[in-house]
Image (cartoon, rainbow, N blue to C red; front, side, top):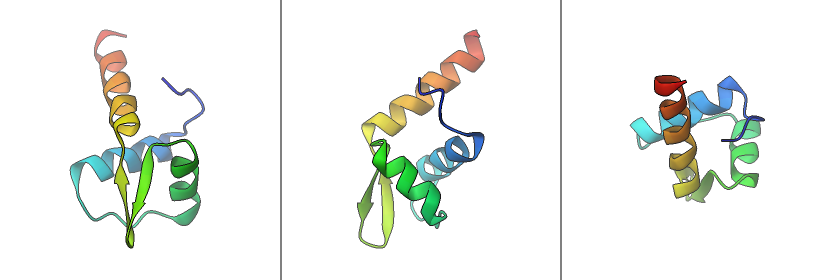
Length: 65
């Protein structure tokens, strides 16, 4: 699990997982893209497997602490 991600970053990852069209701020998109959590897809970004795994890890940790 990436401990350097901010709460805002994780919130945007969750929003991307839950909806297909999310207009996230450019600074968040670039940070997530540089870390490999999202990829550009036309005018929007798509969540990668690494991004989904990050969300699963965080949810698992919150359940089992």
